[in-house]
Image (cartoon, rainbow over all chains, first blue to last red; front, side, top):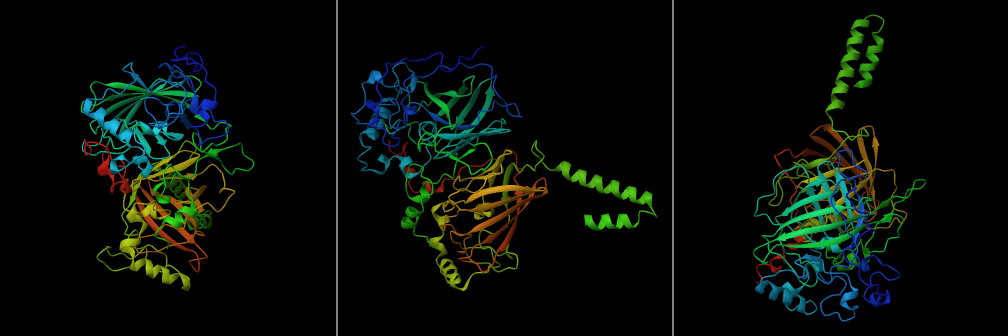
Length: 321
Length: 265
C-alpha cells in the first residue's frame, strides 16, 4: 500500500482551538459548519489508485468537493481573515499557510510585486481605483488557483475530459494530449492539459490571463505564469490534496508551491450554501440524488455566485421584455 | 417508409419468398449500418458528446426576413413562418425589435437562455453521462445540465432559471427534453422575440448522422403565444483538428483592463 489513509498522517498538527474563536467570522455558515475550520492537512501520497474506475479507466472522483481550511479571504493565512481582520485566533491556532514551499509560507515576490500585492490588500475596503475592486466581486471567474478556495464545486468526468464546475467559472481539463492554445490567448480559467498518474491527476496550466487574484490578500501572478497542478486522491476517495507549483519569473524570485486540502461533500449532508450548495433532486421512489441548480452571477447584478434571484433580477434589469 | 416496406413484403410473401428474404436482409443491414455508425454510450443511448454549432441565421431573427444592416437574410426556422403572438404581446415584440440595438440581453453577455443558446453562432460542447448531459456554451461560458436520470422538475416550480430546468428522456434514439422554471429576462433572438416566466420548451435532439443533429424546440407560453409553435435547426459537429472551446466571458471585457497585471504596475 502506497497511499496513506487520509486520517492517518497529518502534515501539521495544530493545537485544538474552540469553535467560538472562529465562529464570529463565519457569518455565511452559522449553525455548526466546521469544514472550513479544519486545522490539519492530511498527507496523501501519490501512488496506485485502488478505488473505483470509470469505463475509460480514469479513477472515478466525480461529485461535490470543497476545501477544508477557510476561504479566499487570505492566501497565506487561510483562517486569519481578510486583510486587517483582528478577530482571529492566535496564528498558532490557525491552519498553516497554503504556501508549502518556500518554508516561510510566503509567496516569493520580487520587491515591486510584493509592493503591488500589499497595495491591493491595503485597499480592499477602500477601492478608490478600479483595480482595487476584487474581480470576483464583479462576477469574474475565480481563476486558477482561487476557484479551489471559493465555494464548493463539482467534478464531472468523461472520456478525454475532467470538468470542474465552480460557482464562478468552469474548467475543462483536456486529457487527450492536444497542444495548448496559442500563447497569446489568455483566459480567466487558463488552458489545462491533464493526465492521470495512479491516484494523481497531473495538469499543465498555461494561457492564464492572471487577472484573478489568489485571495482578498491580493497575491497574483503575471500572464506568463506556468502552473503544474497535482490532485492526489486518498485511497477511500473522500479527500484530495491540490498541490500546485507556480513558475513565473516575471513576478517571483523562484518557483513556489501551494497546497489546498479538499474533501468530498454531499453524501448525506445538508446543503450549507457555502461548501456544499447542491440540492436533493425531485426523485420520488428513488434513492437520494444530489444535483446542482444553474450557476448564475452577473445576470443578477450581484457577486458571490448567487442562484437565480427573481426579485433582484427584476429590479436591477433594464431589459424586461 | 419502414411500415410501407413491411406491408408490401407481407403482400408478396407467398409469391416471391426469395425476393422477400433479400428485402428483409437489406432492411436489416441498412438499419444495422445506421445504428452502428452513430456514437453511443455504453447503455446504448446515442452519445451527443462533441462540439456543435448551427450554420443557420436563427440567432438574428427566427422568422423569415430579408437582409438588414444587422442581420443576414433567412427564410426563418419557424414551422409555419410566423410566431403566433397574442395580440397584447405583439406590441412588446415590436418595441423590443425597435430597441434591439440597445436592449438585447446578449449585449451584456448575459446567459442566452433556452433555446437561444443552442442556435447562437458560437460553439457549445456537450459532455454526456448516462445520468445527464452537460452543455458548456462558449458564449459566457454558461453551463446547462439536462438530467436523464428519471428525476423530475423541482418541487418548487417557480424557480426563475436563465436556462430553465431541463429533464430529458429517450424516445427511441431521440432525446426529448422538457424545460420549465424560466426567468422572463432572456430573448429568443436579436429581433426581440420574447417569452414570459410561463415558458415551457420541449426539445427534440436526434442524430441525422454521426456528425449532424436535428434539433427542434416547441415553445408554449400562454402569456405570450396563442398556441405552441416549433422551431428547428441543424447542428454540425466541429471536426477541425484540435478544435476546442475558448471561454468567452465577454461581460468582463469592460473592466478587465484593470486587473491586475501588468497595467497596474
